[in-house]
Structures are given as C-alpha cells and as structure tokens.
Image (cartoon, rainbow, N blue to C red; front, side, top):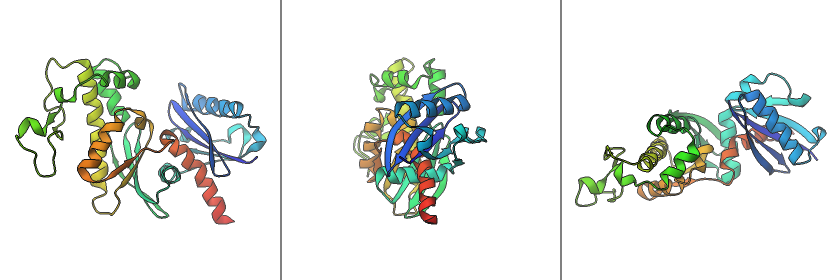
Length: 278
C-alpha cells in the first residue's frame, strides 16, 4: 500500500489526512501546545489508528504556518512542503468537484484563492476570521471558547443586535428584503443578553467574510464560493450563507471535509507533480 500524507500544521492544531488511490483516508485533528508536538502527535496517532506502517508512506507533504518550524524529514520519511494557497485550491477542487471558484479559507483571518481551470492564484483576504471571533468574545463574553460562544448564539436574537431593513423602512428596498442587515450591531441594546451578543459576533464575522468574498468576484464570472477551514463547522453557517445566496444570487459550498481541505491539497500537490513528471 502506497500512501501520501498531507499535513496542515498550525501553531497549536495539526490536521492530517492520507491519500491512497485518490481516496481520502481518516482525516484527523490534534491539538497541542506547539506545532512540533502537534505534528508528531497527529502523525503517530494517524499511523496507529489506521494500522499504517512507515514503509507504506510514499511521501509526507507539509503546509500551513507551523510547517516553517519543521526542517527535517518526519520520522525519516521523504518530506516536502506545499505552498499553502495552492494546497487550498487543490483541496477545495478535489472536495467540491468544481474547477472555477473562489476558495474562502476561514482560519484566524480569511484568505481568498481564485481557481480557474488549472490556474490557482491568491487574490487577497481580510483580517476577519476565527481570531476576530475569539478576540471579541474574550472582551464581550469573557470566554474565547468558540464552542461555548456558538452554543450561546443558538439562543440569541439577532434583531436585538443588528439593525435590519425593516427597522428603517416601511417597505423592502430594491434588492433588499425586510430581514436584510442594514447595520451590524446598529441596534445593540445596553441590556442585550450574552446569547444576543454571541449571535451578533458570529453573524458579523460570517457576513463580513461573505461580503468580502462576493466583492472579490465582481470582475469575474465566478459565482461559486467554496468555504474551508475551522469556521465552517459553526452551525450558524447553515443559515447565514444561504441568506446571502438569495440576496446576491451566488452559491456558497461547504464540502464534506471542509476543515481538512488544505491538508488534502498538500498531498495532492505531490501527486499532481508526480503525474506531471510521468
């Protein structure tokens, strides 16, 4: 059995997948206090859980900000580094089965990668993402645990935080339904509950990312946006992005292995280059 391992090394979290016969094997995520511990912990657990021997591994491909700390072969195996934005694009194309799209990598901040056929290019990004969500939650809710914030948000009322079109107009405006957002946090009350604040923060982050993504596509024919990264796991994505789809006639896609797309893409970088050489 010949397996290519793709590893997305973060500062405290590492994501690892295997690719065998163009199929994804057992995606795994491990948290640790530093990238080295996280990497080796994830790699060892992945091999053990899947009964994979070191001799079964053809190549180890690293990507992500934590990959800069790794300067030698992992467990003595052939190891290379994949450019992160290329990995984002290849992983998203693999998971979505699309060729033309903008990949929205929602991490600590958000990066935007345009894919058109075989062309993959980083087109920019915004400093809004999981770091924003954690920072504002730390200040306003006294916790930066995203799971706690997300649970609080399920019981919040966004109308107690955001100013909606219905609050400023008796009739829908052109292209804007009454439930559309007129101003994020524009209707925030001094007595807003923690639950209301939580949904307000999450919606602000997700809408900010969605709006930036849509604007980034205006000079192209692309209307499909593939969302990847940890923030795609927020349950609020299931109604924030569909609302924006209706408003702007676009399509947001969260693939099956959305949080592992970059790791998948890292492995595919090697397989694509191998195929090219052959």
